[in-house]
Image (tube, rainbow, N blue to C red):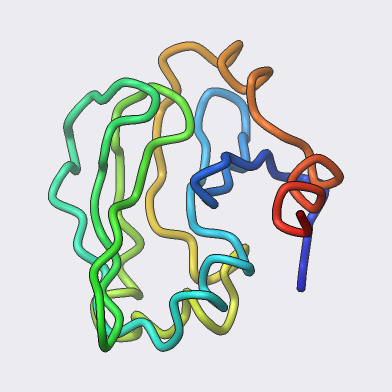
Length: 126
């Protein structure tokens, strides 16, 4: 399992990597491992401003569909265009090429309520 320290984690297994007021969002290595082979990423919220915890899309695997929750509030600026042709990038490189959306954060202070790598490791190892 991979637990980068340059991202924050949610208990819904999303991660967020801020770069100024913009941030990249995806699912964790643990989440993609638990889900299995990802066949489709569906995000229809591009251009919308959502609150922390709202559903911004879903991930489809062979047997199920899982909702994706926004770690902090903000405007969905972009969906990773590579995922349209290669949804499996989320499995192969969840923290890199497999990012799902890019957002403009409404309130970067919301990041403080999220977990660091050590805290996230503890919740999945319970």
